[in-house]
Length: 205
Image (cartoon, rainbow, N blue to C red; front, side, top):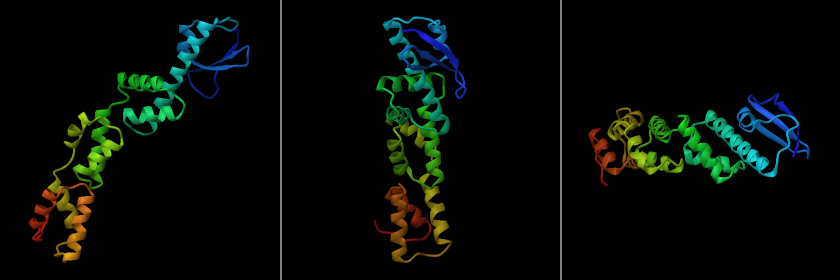
């Protein structure tokens, strides 16, 4: 297969366009051009062309992966799923994620810690944070380390109750509503009950 023309892309930095005689357009990086020593007029045999296409595909997936995490932090699992949704093979997506991890651009532990801090800023307790870590594909072995980023549950619950009650004693209906809200936020009853009693609110489990 003859390369009719090699041309630098006007829209993508470091992108080289290879126009083949059958009308195929290959989107390459400078690395593929150097690795395969490509020049206009080269004739590529079937094996070389197949290897070039595979290399170009992998480079394209890596570029897309970098673009995705540049827009929003995410776990390795979620990145690989998004890449596959955009047409990458499982192997290409996994390789792109591993490449980003190797250069320090993708870090599940750092992402888990940041996610835990964000959840804490929203007033979520440990159980809700665990749910979020699960939903975002963070490996379970990183959960406990991430949970260390959370303030003490008693401190979070106290702030929540003080903000809602402003010094007054809630009636039974409001007490149940506050307890329900805290449990839904991911706090356990073993933390909610003592925090209420500390504010002078008697409770029954």
